[in-house]
Image 1 (cartoon, rainbow, N blue to C red):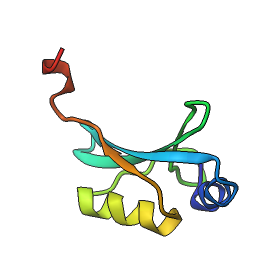
Image 2 (tube, helix red, strand yellow; image 1 turned 90 degrees about the horizontal axis):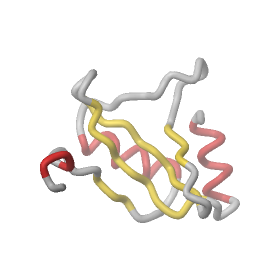
Image 3 (cartoon, rainbow, N blue to C red; image 1 turned 120 degrees about the vertical axis):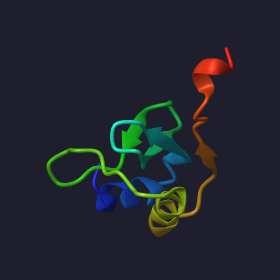
Length: 82
């Protein structure tokens, strides 16, 4: 979803959480918004390619540009926590 679509979902109170996910391929962070039904909406460019941010701070700032919601940071070591 492009930013304008994410903002519209936020305005409609459909988004319940933002999840920041570490992207191993780009070594950056992607932002995924989660709605009430558990659907995952990553921030994408106009071509539908997920955006990647250089730092965790940049990803958090992007969430704040869309709106206020709880932020969860995906654990980098989730595979080892099982």
